[in-house]
Image 1 (cartoon, rainbow, N blue to C red):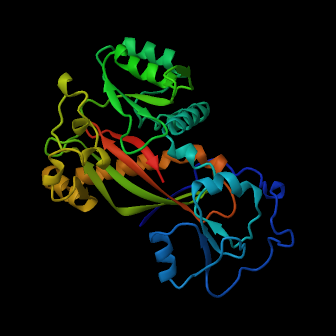
Image 2: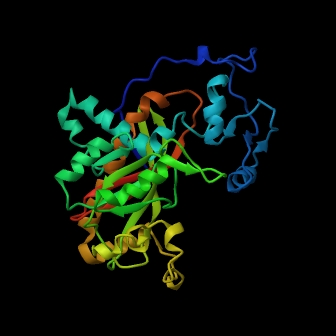
Image 3: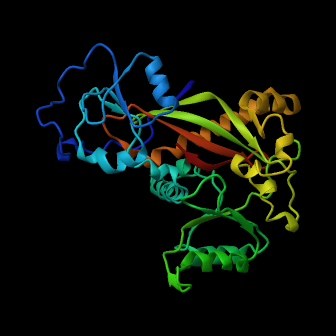
Length: 356
């Protein structure tokens, strides 16, 4: 991994550990760190567990509090973390409130808010926050979106549900009446007796579609990269050198007739594997990052490819500071984030989504 460190970001908030309820009141923060075998706790029964066991670490029981590392899930962090006390040596694998970064609508909200905030004092810094398409959150921003849509009637837009993944619920449109079905389905649900009842509309983000993406062999692709954040103050990021890219199985087209063809416009593996051409691809619609770089270097030269990936790294850096205030805490050993970057033409790097 390569290290990317910066001192940008907000100062940590006051430590709120005094306000947390302790499950073991006789514990104190000044106890020395234990020595010997590392003790861990996790509910997962997958590669995480296997990796820890292979290192000779000892798993503790569900009700035991005497652990060094707790590999928890996000639900545990939301429900339990603020109500327990951790020793200075105890580490968990998440920052609190990580959904502020990993959910589409919250990510955009925080980026916009941070851009406005730093724009008041350092406008030149705020100008760097231009790496996401024009975005609105529906239904709340519908009036604003409709105004923007009418100013650019020839643009294509893409709708994405904020709480789903693997390409589910995503669609493109070029006319406002094309989202009327979404509006009706989101606001009403049919009950068991055949009647309809009002329900809360499912939130979507709507973004101006990048109609001229950078293509490889005529196909859309995005790049999946991973970064380990070990600290928010100072902001310290370890960027993995490895990664991969995902391709569409059908050649890209701007033909209006292909607007609803997910195999043209989406790169999600869960979508592409349903294409009849997917099984013919020996690489499963993916390249590792090294193969992508070699291909690009053969066509555009080493210097341009190095510049492209430097620009991607520059995009990663300003993505994280907006979340520092809600994430500064003791007890987190770091968290790994996976992000997708797409390239417009000429190679404008655009952040798409960040996930755990």
